[in-house]
Length: 141
Image (cartoon, rainbow, N blue to C red; front, side, top):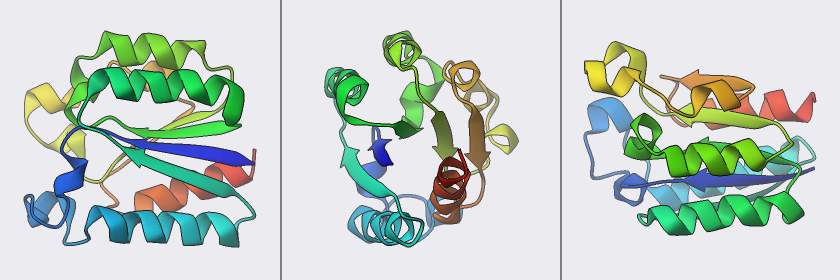
């Protein structure tokens, strides 16, 4: 199973940004863990990160032809990007929404997710382990 893992805006700042919420792992370290976990589960993970919403949408369009499942962490776009939501609606495959922090326990505006209802599962507040949980869920599909 090919799993596209799409990380959004500001996730390239992991390791520098608010370790209380996001931990101390850098994005390259997180990607290494995701790829290792995927391999252990017999999956193939392809990871991307961008700070450009249009690029994120393009990768979702690419997933139509090249992925069997998608894990998304759109970052702040989670809360307002209907462009990303619309692109996710096109995918006829499992979509898992992941957030490192527990967004439902944070500021009120972070509790809104415009992508949650197109995801088959949401994992939040588990740090990097949330990606492992998402991969394990997909491996069972």
